[in-house]
Image (cartoon, rainbow, N blue to C red; front, top):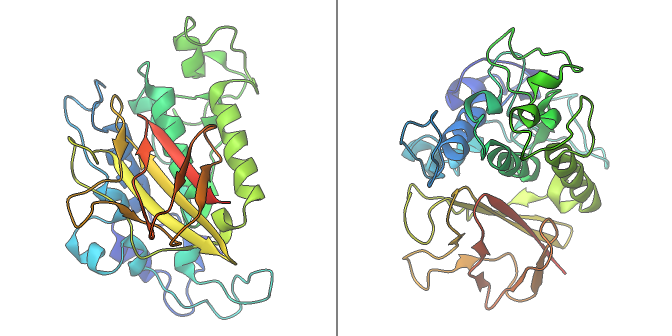
Length: 302
């Protein structure tokens, strides 16, 4: 059973996952962090952002206290609830591993309500990639796959057959021939692909997250817009690297040591299964990963 506390405070949300409480909660804090990091990413020209841009550190946690806990998930219980959620082997699953990740829902304005500009769909696709690759349970609200743009309740409860509710009808030159229930539009197809690869690779559903998570408050420079983490499960390894920057490629290259990102294995070829034609080699357990604007790489060890 999961609950809803309409608040962005991780301490408050985590308090509901203590002993003999709920198995999980809607991760509102992460939703608000996504709003910061993706909607107002470096390089954006959105009217909504009014010239502001943000790095990716909010995706990890709000402050240094969260960073010291290993990110916002550190506020949530790592002990399975008695009689609660179990995995395929019958073992209990801790609340911090089954938090409900979402972007849109019935209580908040839709992502595209704020980002109804010509780059809104690309921005939303990238945020969805993060959502589906993050640990926990992805929750998709109806109409997101159709590009609905409704504001706060009741604006976010659009009729599914209303063509005008979609961003695809706002920009007919970019998205020609859109009709309600369309299954060929770029958002529907992107979500379909995310579900396919999540189902294909157990590590993307069940993998533990490595201790080295790459995030930055930078809005300029090599790593501006980068958020990266690793997942491992039963000798399967994945590296997820997000670039929120809307106009520039960025890479996992910082200023500490050799600047390269720690990889789950000392060697091996990692192939991007979400974007064709890219792979990277782990050399001594390190790699520099280049990511185009508004793109997420999902790298799987071959």
